[in-house]
Amino acid sequence: MIVPVPDGERARWVPLAPPVQTSDGTLKSTAVACFRPNGRKHANAEHAFADGEGMSPNKTEFSMRFENRVVIVTGGAKGIGEGCCRVFCREGGHVAILDRDTDAAESLAVELTDAGPGTATAFACDVADHERLRGVIDDVATRFGRIDCLVNNAGVHPDATPIDETGVEDMERLMRVNYLSTFAGCKYAMPHLRKTRGTIVNMSSMTAVLGQHLSTAYCATKAAQVGLTKALAIEAGPDGVRVNAILPSNVDTPLMRHWAASLADPQSALARVAALQVFGRMASPEEIGRIALFLATEDSSFVTGQAIEAEGGASLDY
Ligand SMILES: NC(=O)c1ccc[n+]([C@@H]2O[C@H](COP(=O)([O-])OP(=O)(O)OC[C@H]3O[C@@H](n4cnc5c(N)ncnc54)[C@H](O)[C@@H]3O)[C@@H](O)[C@H]2O)c1
Image 1 (cartoon, rainbow, N blue to C red):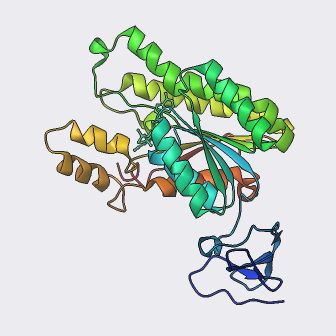
Image 2: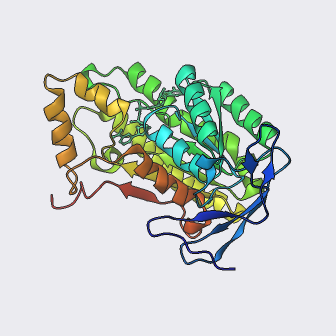
């Protein structure tokens, strides 16, 4: 069977059996298959719905690259983490949104589950509390039966501060949030990821390799994530677990807007930052989410221990 997929669409879901009438009178498909742009049926993308369940209009077009798999995204309620959650959910994944902003995490979970085709569940978690992080990771594994990917994304960027005014305790606190949470997340997720031959994606930053003025503490935490990524990739490789880092340059997120708002002229600060990339713009959170998806699927099966510089050409032509 060959089904044409219109230009510009990534895939099309097609009923395999006549729809049934549900109690509220609507017609619902009972079994569907996914077709690729070349018209051929997508292997493993046939789905029979249980009684009463069915395709809703907003669940009709997607390519399901993360179908029935489970991802944990720390700091998933906003910014880059939110972008990751949107992408994984759109690809059929079950997304565990871990965030200290519980309200934002819960409303995003409701929105994503409603939109489908995947589902999202919010978990209150401050990643600086490593025991809590461990508990939530185990809870996700119990509830969903598996963990396929951990995105260690939660992080904060302090205001620009010279080293003379950065206390050792400030550095220690930032390490706890930005780096130790990444280490702890990897450590506690590894037993689950070995079972699924899963993946870890650590959200570092271009500042790990380029530095950033008045950001010694932040840059150190981001560079530590890269070292951890490479060392763990060696250790985890024989178990089939891949570990990679993404190093974004500038992404349009609440963190970025908050930084700009702290300056005298926020609009020109944002324009200056956008101009650093050769495209003259910042990345969107979902653009980074799509890289995370690539690193979490078989599309990147030979990629591990890498620091992927997602920088829109910002480091070229210096
Ligand atoms: N925005 C950028 O340009 C940029 C560039 C390079 C790297 N990064 C990195 O990307 C990651 C996300 O940045 P963003 O710009 O999306 O930030 P953001 O502030 O816009 O969003 C961060 C999310 O993480 C949550 N969070 C923060 N601290 C937490 C904690 N201790 N426990 C649980 N949740 C917590 C926040 O509530 C929020 O939902 C960070 O690690 C950051 O270092 C961002």
